[in-house]
Image (cartoon, rainbow, N blue to C red; front, side, top):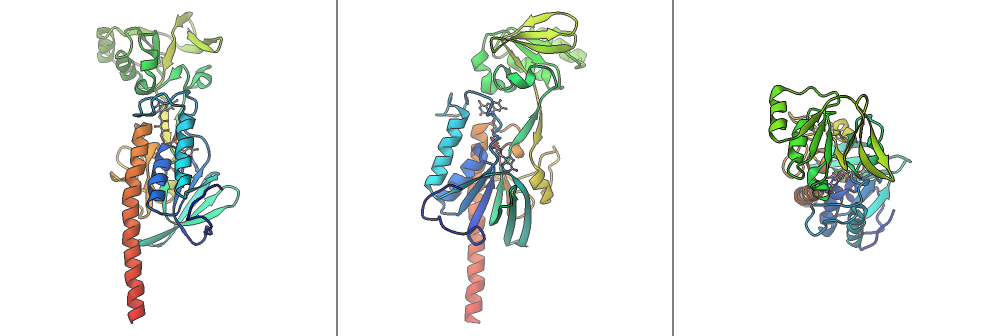
Length: 325
Ligand SMILES: Cc1cc2nc3c(=O)[nH]c(=O)nc-3n(C[C@H](O)[C@H](O)[C@H](O)COP(=O)(O)OP(=O)(O)OC[C@H]3O[C@@H](n4cnc5c(N)ncnc54)[C@H](O)[C@@H]3O)c2cc1C
C-alpha cells in the first residue's frame, strides 16, 4: 500500500470513507475529488485498464496523444498527493451491512485483505470480447482497432477494413467513411439486408464476400486480410466491433438492478439502486471514453460526498440527542 498525507496511519477497520474499485480514469477521478474533499479513500486496482494495448490516448482535451499509462500514473500521483492510498489486487467480493442511512461495506480482496468502508465506487470497466480470428488478439489496439473517434484520425485516408463479425459492423463501415474513402466491409459470416447493401453501395463501401482466415502481419505491421477462399486484400488498418462485457459481477452480487438496456442502472451521478454503491465508467456505460469516464467519476464523487455529509449530520444529531437525554 502506498500513500502519504495527513490522513495516513488509520487502520482499515476504523476509518475508510470510500473504497474505489478500479483505477482507470473513472475510479481515479472519483478518488481525486473525494481525497480533495478530505475523505479517506483507498483505491484497489488489478492493473488491467482497457486501453493498455494502445500506444496513445486520443481525444481528451489537453491529454491528446499521451500514453495511456502516463495518464494513469499522473492521476495516481495526484490522488496520493491528497492522502489517497492504493492497493494492488483484485476485489473478489463486497458485502453490505449497516442501515440505509449509514451503510457499511466489507470489501474482500484476493490474498485475504479485508477493508471496511462507508461507501464503494465500482469502476471496474469492461472486457472486450474479440472474434476468434488469427491475428486479431495480437494486433488489438495497434492496427486492429474498434473506435474511430480514438484512432480514426491516425489512419485517415488509408485503406481500411471492417470485420463483419457483429451486426454493428455495417454501421461501423459507414461511420469510417468519415475518415477514409477506401473502406471495405469483410462480410465474413454476417448476413446483410437489402437496405444495408444499398447504403454501403451508395457510400462506396465495398463488400468483400467470403470468410476471413487471418490478419496478415509482416515486420510487426498489419498488411491485409487473408480470406479462406479468395486470397488477400491489402489494408493498413482493420476495425472490429467487439462484444463489450461489463465487469459488473460485484455490482450484481450486491443486488444492483440492471436497466432496460442491460447494464447496471445508475442515475446521472452514478448512484445505483443499492444505497451506498456507486458505479462509473465503462462498467455501466460502454460508450464512455476516457474523458467521459473521468467525468462520471467526478460527478459521482460530488454526490457521494454530499450523501456522506448528510450521514454525518444524521449521526451527529442522534449522538446529540443521546447526550441530552
Ligand atoms: C484499444 C483501445 C483503445 C482506446 N483508446 C482510447 C482513446 O484513445 N481515447 C479514449 O478516450 N478512449 C479510448 N478507449 C476507451 C477507454 O479505454 C475507456 O473509455 C476507459 O478505459 C474507461 O475507463 P474506466 O475507468 O471505466 O475503465 P478501465 O480504464 O478499464 O479501468 C478499470 C480498472 O479496474 C480494474 N479492475 C477490474 N476489476 C477489478 C476488481 N475486481 N478489483 C480490482 N480492480 C479491478 C482493472 O484492472 C482496470 O485497471 C480505448 C479502448 C480500447 C479497448
